[in-house]
Length: 166
Image (tube, rainbow, N blue to C red; front, side, top):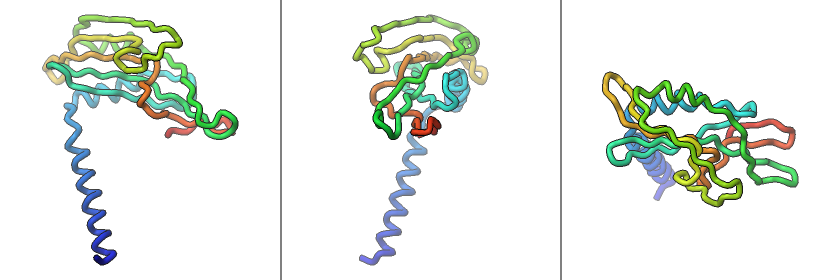
């Protein structure tokens, strides 16, 4: 096998993976816009932070869980440790985006809780109807107090104190 044949094969495989990723996003446009605009409602206590989310379609409605990614300490004696980033969230603005609010729930867990599954650490959950392009859409939104355990860090804190996105 010639080296250029291997390279062509790798390029073709990379293109196929890229096309599959594009096809996997089955979210409707209204939901993508909602996710992007809702992420802007987070007000982190640091200069840089990254909002993450988990989006699923479940029994005739979309569920979106938002969270602010942890910071990972880079270098020094705490290298690799993760720290939570404090944040404010504009809940009133989120509620105003709903045409109808069916439920608004708050759940508090003990600080030492090991339940890091997104279904078990929801801080605030809003369920209701959105008016999207003339049609109503059922949606449940969760604002998590911390990211799910499987989520990687959102930012890295460097030894000089600078914060950079991961």
